[in-house]
Amino acid sequence: MQKTTVYLEEDAYRRLKEIARARRRPPAEMVREAVAEYAARHAPRRKARSIGAGHSGRRDLAQRTEELLDGFGEDR
Image (cartoon, rainbow, N blue to C red; front, top):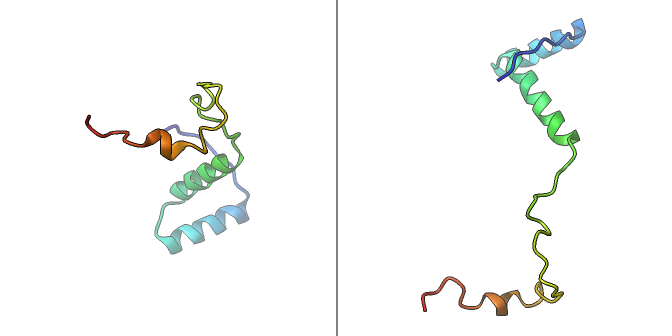
């Protein structure tokens, strides 16, 4: 965990403390939660590196999944 300093307007800090007191949680914990939610909502979404990594050249795989996976995982 990294430590940082955040300056809040007096009114915002007062409201934060009221909410924290009502929820019986430390204000710092609520700030961390708010920052995490903000970052999750606004961070660019990255695709997994494995998406599109393989190219079979076949366009019917999605339609044939059941056929192709028939018997998969069974001992022979």
